[in-house]
Image (cartoon, rainbow, N blue to C red):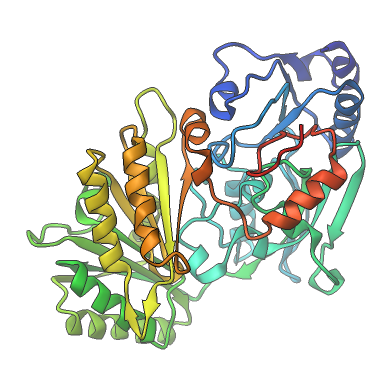
Length: 451
């Protein structure tokens, strides 16, 4: 099977997958070959040959977010896009940048910062994550609160499809983007619809002022009171998370966690003009006093950024024995009812459900989005997931339980709990129309029953 691909790419870029290669364990399907194309044209040629021979292909960027989505039915070839890298166009005046899909986000951030610009994406694994991989996985970090998901920064794409065709969607400039953005369907598709080859991005100016504040609260009741007050404030944070204090200690955050009665730590980040940030911090201090917070700490830009970086990367260190990633379960709920926050009570119920089934976990909440993540350092059992899922039965129209990420064995065992993207129905139709033979990771998107 390897010879046709070696003719296309050369021996150095088409090779057998070794048994110890991590791709098989993470994907849950053991690829036989690894291919390393260096251009969009080579990606398209590889897919054409794969389609002719009926072999399946799994795109692989930085490998940081392959623990999401359903387990593929098969993956004969792992398509490594790391050599498909580099910034192809950068117009600082127009605040746009184009990059090949294998370009690391860290490299894009460095290039943008040199021009006083910013791509506000901060997914876990930022140092190794690639722009194509982040878009395909649909994964975000704390900055999603203020700036949206990866797809919200994308103006257009160049993609290779399962029959070897190259296609474009959108454009390089804002003024060129008209009609429905078909590339939005790539977000969260895990590579099942097309291989992303190049991405056109919209940047933002670096903020004039960047500051954060940390608030320690004693229980769920005061947490809900504080969250409701934050929602009423005039200035909205660009990043906004809640962690339990014990988790904050294990994350080794660079701030004071010493209050003996502290239960929850709320972190808020503001990026704006200096006066707007000052008003925001003042309103948070007022809200914290009204909610009877135990401790309030203002953080300068460097400490605040480092704190959110630690929070972003910390769950990945809570891994199963012998695994590179933890199991993360998620409750999504409407965060307010009649002007009052309901997340505090749901957090306590979730932690109690986990503890009651013998599966202690850490907590990471995004209040503005109504997302509550439970991060398991040990292997959770079916009763644990059943107990968390049962919480949604109180108000099924307001809550949803999913498994966000984890080793392939866990995702296969609890497939019914895997979440669907907002574009799932359209993604499924597009998959059937453009890849009827299931060349690109069949089964990778939940509900994709293409054989």
